[in-house]
Length: 225
Ligand SMILES: [Zn+2]
Image (cartoon, rainbow, N blue to C red; front, side, top):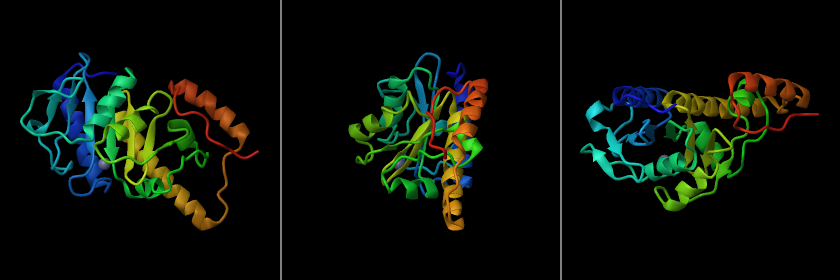
């Protein structure tokens, strides 16, 4: 869903910013959020501001190429990653990038999260790939992340954080929450000993559930035989 009203797009961004901050998913001025309008233009968060305390006048309206249409604040260089994601997949209406602690810790390992540990993760996210390290704000980082946005629901950014996308900002935010929750659960499971996965049979059943929810992206994580 792309936004038909600027007010709705901006309110979704401000609300997502408050939630990211309250949950400790962004420290200081970290993170960025954007929303795409029906006309293809984008509303984005400013740089140098806590995402928990933004006001409407801080948000910046951008053309798809990143040139500013409206707004006096500067956007982060990381918005290039959002623009690349929107260019790559026309279905996406919202992008959320955060540095939530568990997901960011997992991202230091530079590997995909490709196992089925919980029903919710398997349905809502599927596999979460890891985009290889690139300097923040670089065209390479944008390219590395955007290449996953047709097939998956989000990705880790090696030694950096994670980015999720969805039909709107709320769905992208929920995927950020689900991703962080998943990695926390995984760490707890490791503490318990064996990491016990859903079975392949259970995963096949869950594919039908995904279909019912209209989730076609994310791929199938590994289960146990
Ligand atoms: Zn970042």
